[in-house]
Length: 228
Image (tube, rainbow, N blue to C red; front, side, top):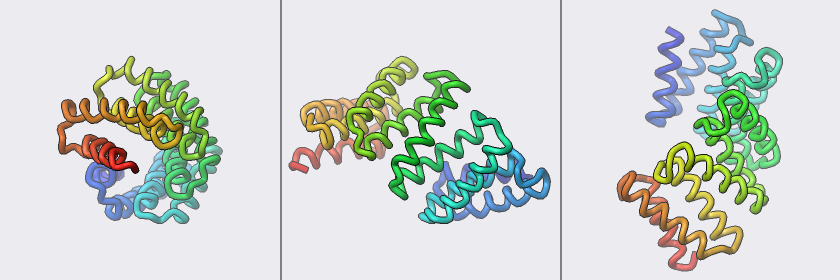
């Protein structure tokens, strides 16, 4: 029953965006795992970490942060530092710190740990490693470390091209973020537009004109054309 609850909770949140339902289910799974295996078991900590993630999506940043901090402290005591569950919790917490709380230094510190952990577990070109590096680059960007962010985005793109080829949604996502950095932060308007035009053309072919990623690129180019 707990395993079914985990799967349904994940679907509710990640697939359907029904985070209220996901929060309720993750709370039930965490409580059930606690009673079955103890409050510091891997399954309980995983469920509580996902509960904190649901709180983040429901715009409950204070409650989410408190729960993430408790889970991470317990994981530090009871799990290996490179345990995948612990790394995912740290990445999700970093997303909260960056996106909701604007604590970029704390987010960067966590993401450095996550990148190192996933690299050790899976290698430098695994999906999780590259996603973590993309998040790290975004944090550097938002922190104002623009040249560091540019180098990291470019390194991620090289690895993504090697793993996925040049026409893949992950590649387009990184190119979009790099285009924004070039155009809006580093004063390279021409380079940013050129890169974003590549994203738009590839998105129309790969994903379709109606895909959110393609529409986002088109919308940004239109704003830039109007001088924004």
